[in-house]
Image (cartoon, rainbow, N blue to C red; front, side, top):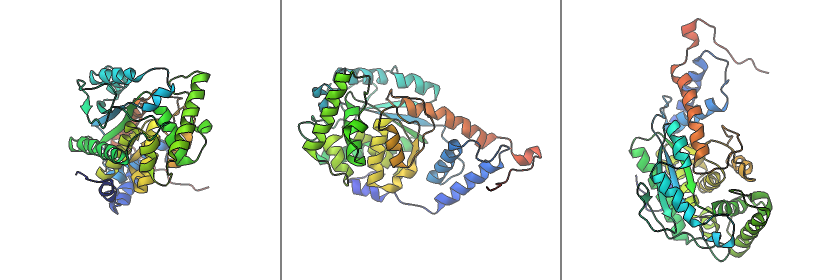
Length: 358
């Protein structure tokens, strides 16, 4: 499955009457397990959602990958971060060598990390990192657009291709992650454009900015929005004008997951900003999105609310790289162990619970 245009990709995300059949079968499976009804809460809902997406109540998430999109952002020139673009490349190199923060967490979760160069300033190739470069970083959004519309569309299609490549390799669960110094600034601008909030409401300290640094970041977001005037009704315009290669690529991962019927775990602030772009492009893509956690960044909760998603984890996380997404995988594994192998009411001779009403 390969798409030449974003419109072709969106047209491939279609409903199927078997979705509800699979969801109901999963619900019956949960109801047969010897425990109080709905007592695993959002974990039960997640399994049922995944069953509906994959059209199969026999949910198998044993093969999983994290797509870690790495890209640099021109807005870094405005002093919006305490480190430079060389850190993006350093983390990408560590990820390629399986040494970065998310790699250590992913190993516990049995998740393969696939780092991807979407457009870092430091030229590649980097061992262990896929080359999907769209440029040497984006433009400074305080001076002009981050990228052309054609680049934004190519980034979306690249993300979708990455997702579908993983599916073709037998992966049943995708997680999203990113690495790009300055990308909480671009994500704040994207969130402001899509949600209509003020930069003061949407912009946080990222990796630990000082008060003065936060002031520079706020000014950068305000200037970018005023200068570029992104159209909130056109997510591709928003991505092109104030986004980043990483955000646009993750938008494509969510769309590719929906087209290929592979569930995709959202990470935190940057990932959910990308997910909202995907949802605005195609509301049906929401069926592929699973919320791992709520970011500690100011817009974290608002983005999840706009997506209509509830997080599995609330832990004040804001590390990035997809760490929140992989942290949710063991929870899903434990839920599936009970779902697939749990003791049933029939096998114990215990009378099944029934809904009691109000």
